[in-house]
Amino acid sequence: AKQNGHGHFQFYVASIDQEIRDRKQLEKDLTQALGNHQFHLVYQPQINLETKRVIGAEALIRWEHPTRGLVPPDYFIPVAEANGTIVEIGQWVLEQACWQAARWAAEGTQLRIAVNLSAVQLRQPTIVHDILNTLKRHNIHAGHLELEVTETSFMTNLSDAVEKLHLLNQAGISIAVDDFGTGYSSLTYLKQMPVQHLKIDKQFIRDLLVNEEDTRIANTIIDLGKSLNLSVVAEGVETAEQEYYLSQRGCKLAQGYYFSRPLPSREFETFVKGFHQN
Ligand code: C2E
Ligand code: CA
Ligand code: CA
Ligand code: CA
Image (cartoon, rainbow, N blue to C red):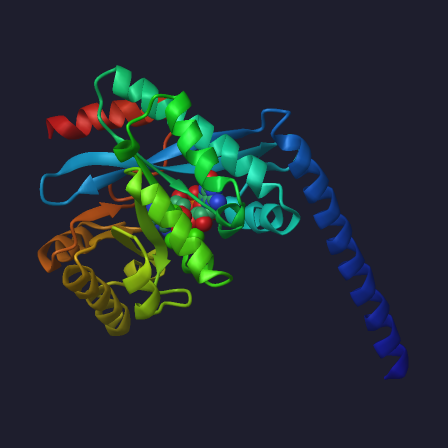
């Protein structure tokens, strides 16, 4: 048994070692990815369920790694947050999204772009200035930018987060709480936070109408939004039944594969034109 145990132990160490080397390599690749132009953004339409119009898009980052192929953001964003590269990557995302919003505005398409803002970015002392400066340089109306923050952003330093979000909000940028209900949700936070939107996480939408608890959670978030006067966005809507239920229940905005997957900018533009004709 001991011999087996020893062999097992060695195998275990080797695999952890491999994992550490893998992650080190990924970190190294990540620091070079920006300079090597390996990132691009895709845009997922956000639909107003009442008017059946595309009101905007969420910008989502994609990393085309030279050997690994497409690396999912759920995998590399936490690494970028841990080693700080998210600050530079996040600024690039913002630049790119603002550039895109300016182009759409110039073409007469008034769309709001939602950008994910990492808690690490929000902690940067210059973040408010950086964001407002980026808007200004691209000549974007502040109302055309939305920032999606998660509840983690409020946890380390609540008053700092409140102050910064207030400044951004006063400038006209809207704030959405992303993945609402999955993190450290607190009504106290919500009361203090200058936020306008709650995003119901896709984990509650996936089994909507199948799982009773998920249905109740979604209902609760929609009702909370109503009573606090916040508009609710459902994410991960994949079926007509989910869309119908949500719109009947009073959820105004939605995004998900049912409408469209996140798309490259050209395809997004085509989608918007086609959708408006329906
Ligand atoms: P998120 O902000 O909650 O984004 C929603 C995710 O759900 C996206 O995954 C989107 O592609 C996916 N999705 C949309 N509709 C559906 C649907 O109907 N069904 C299912 N199953 N999934 C759907 P994605 O693009 O892989 O991004 C994953 C996460 O990575 C994001 O979650 C966000 O936390 C992070 N992320 C992505 N781009 C950025 C970025 O530019 N900056 C930061 N800080 N984080 C980002
Ligand atoms: Ca998001
Ligand atoms: Ca989510
Ligand atoms: Ca997320």
